[in-house]
Amino acid sequence: MRSFLPGRRGSGAVISLAAIVAVGMFSMRLARQQASPTPFELFQRMMPVARHPRCANCHGGVDPFSGRGHLPGAIDTVDAHKGSYQCSDCHQKGWDIPSPDHFVVGKTDREVCAIWAEFAMKQGHARFIKNHLTEDELVIAGFEGEAGGPLSPPDKPQMKQREFINLGKDWVEKGQAACELLGTIVLRESVAASDSFSLAGPLEIRQSYSGTRTVTISVRDGKYYADIRTDYTMVETSKQTLADPKTGQPCHITSIRNERQSGTTTGVASVRIKDTIYFGDTDPPQTDYRIDVMLPPETTTRNESRTVQDGCGTGFPFAPASETGSYTWGRMWFVIEGHVEDPKADGRAGGCERISKSTEINTFILENDRKRMPCFRFKNMGNSWYLGLMRRTLPKTFHDETPVPYHLNATWNLKYAK
Image (cartoon, rainbow, N blue to C red; front, side, top):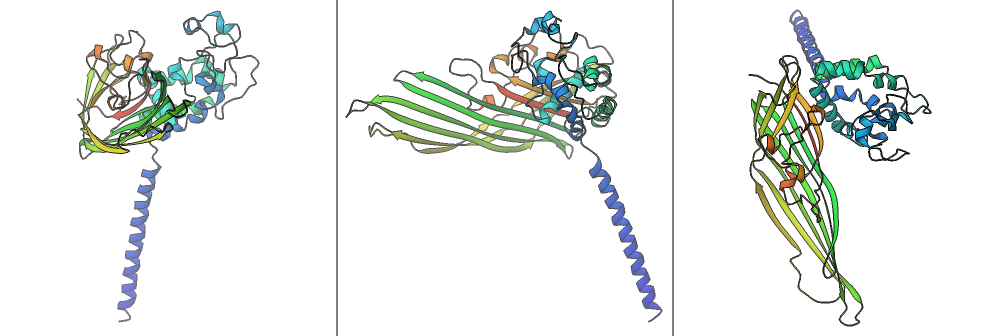
């Protein structure tokens, strides 16, 4: 027994040691997996520079296009980008700012990532690093602490330009210059607007509407699945002025209608990636591509409530205080366009950050400038689409028929295989 027990204890120790080693190896593998940063996390490492005043001031911090924060006021955008005297009169020669499409102030990190991803995609990853991060004279000047105005004190970004370039290379090479994980498409729509107008009566009406719709497409078990979340609210306040039947003095009937629609849908999506050529200056081995996405039918639930304050004592019957219902929306689809310089090295990854209006949906921007091309295909190029929120019961235009602005943000990162 004595000779057996020590042996038993020894085997137990061996088993325990083996278990410890196995757990340790698993923990090391898990730690390595967890330590691998996502493309978005790689991009965020560059944000301290993008948010620094030396960069942010030019990218929307001071906006001479609209005059916001620009002491001389607004300037003519066309003349300014032609190198007109308007900039060089007050600023260092050659100093310029990007177009408003590349403004980052007031945007989230993900929205900024979409802008950068689109820029890198259309520039080509290698040229993005060389032409913009490395050799752009204004970027170099910014890292030296120089600003557009000669009286501005030097204030350099927290990191050196070489470190910033290396972070950019990591994002491009390890993260495909993407904002999402491989095999993912994310489409975010939002709206926040209000409208006020008067009708005969007199009747004053104010409408405010806000909402979001997020479509997340990911690969699971070899199929694409879409998770769609919609949530929006519309509040309509109507105030009618009448004469009090007893006193003849003005009185008011105020009605408030609150409508909310929300829903969550999960289902199989159809995603097709195909190479094509639609930019006139795309030459092999460069290629353009399109991603056709068909979503599953969506369902939303509507809850509506109304309250009426009868300040005139009319005693009129009013509509029911609350109603509920549901909507089933057909299969919606959209098309993403992209460009790659090297199809073998660059993945089908990119981004898009836009303000979309109903009046612009079925038009094509006739510019031979890839930087300002729409990231979605419009009717004149073969397809027609509306944002999902536009197709709900939210309005496309204000009462005077001017379009309501809807904010669009899309990012994608897909592997292409012929």
